[in-house]
Length: 233
Ligand SMILES: O=C(c1ccccc1)c1ccc(-c2nc3ccccc3n2[C@H](C(=O)NC2CCCCC2)C2CCCCC2)cc1
Image 1 (tube, rainbow, N blue to C red):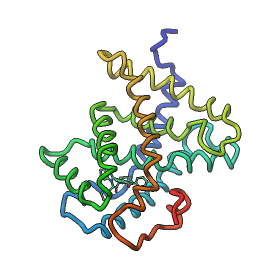
Image 2: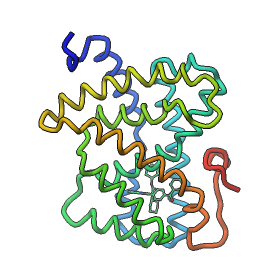
Image 3: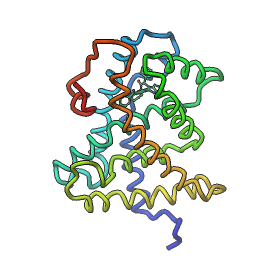
């Protein structure tokens, strides 16, 4: 078989992932809300916690549709969700930031985020990531697969059977490699660049706890789900 040709079963697999990804979109468009007006730090934090809470629920539904996930050890299923939730938040935020908007809107959105209440020191790594995701111009299949691959990362904390997770992640990496060759024929390095983003995503992971407690305000309220997933309060 041609090493770049997508097989029938890989196409079926891809359709399951893409269908799940599309069915589990974030309901309200947060970027649109942010473009309307500049909110206070408190209002922005509330918006973030509401968005992130609904995103975690969406993420769980999406993950349950990844072939093989539900046959993993139950504690490992939790460890994978917990281990990837922050990265999924940044990935989904990067996609929200990179969505094609009328000219000038992306700059307004960036300004709103810069003044949202997040402390200055995190702006550079966060926007570097957003822009590097934007430059890739990923097609939907790539976005869906990249999210699934991020979730199915074997070396998350507390995962007991890493081999079982590897066996689920490898086929997705193979499909992604083929999709990259298909959709970005002129860029043989595209697949490698895509995987490089996953490494950058992990570095953002380290900041998330500080990012949360550094919002310029005093009383932080998290939903119980976020306390669990973000290891806060
Ligand atoms: O500090 C953050 C963090 C990240 C992970 C874990 C803990 C904290 C942290 C987290 C998101 C963004 C972030 N980058 C964005 C890029 C474009 C558009 C919105 C964006 N947002 C926030 C947002 O609502 N994101 C949604 C997107 C859908 C999926 C759930 C999340 C708003 C919240 C209102 C104020 C301004 C930014 C900016 C910063």
